[in-house]
Image (cartoon, rainbow, N blue to C red):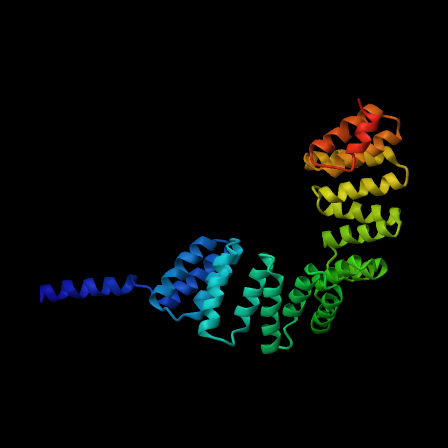
Length: 302
């Protein structure tokens, strides 16, 4: 009787601490939600070891790898999901996102096409396909996809924002501003939308309007280097050269290797008669790889 009791206790202890594939899967989900993607991958490895055809585990492991920027590893996992479940729209979508991150835009588009074939109302697939098309400079195709994404999900500020970028690329600055307006209406703290609206206004020579938008972008993100740089550019066009220099100073403080900020500051310094300061900045720009100021340096600086 005593031996049987000991054996019973041993078996009970063993079963108590043995986890199933589903338990590892759930543990991995919790870890991933808390930002512990490495821990999630460890648990998903165990889930897959226990259940080699566990499509959900491969999918979530791919997502965890995506979050760790291991895009090739993520694609391998999404490939396995698709092998196990050929109609898994999420796996095609996720694989498309990984390919887009790797700048394989044609591959990404192919995967988004498959998602749309399986789920014609997948707004995010149209949105991301539009993004990939924009990267390939297929601007009309990109706008068509953003239009569809907006039709399916009218409250997505990112679709308006990205369509605005595409319109800006087509030099449709008024159309771009209209889209940035909509994105901002949907998300009042959308820093990049203010910044890009300012950029479009700059292109329309609405420098005061541009400055107002760059001000807002800087209010939302005080370390927004490009916002200081472009605000300086706007001020320079309004002949506020000292104000421009102050903004270029800040841009350089945030990014000491920004050749274009040194170059533009040299222009502003030349315009206020500070030739020595202009030469110093132009030479620094040349040292950082700028070719535009090299001729000016040769002609004006000792």
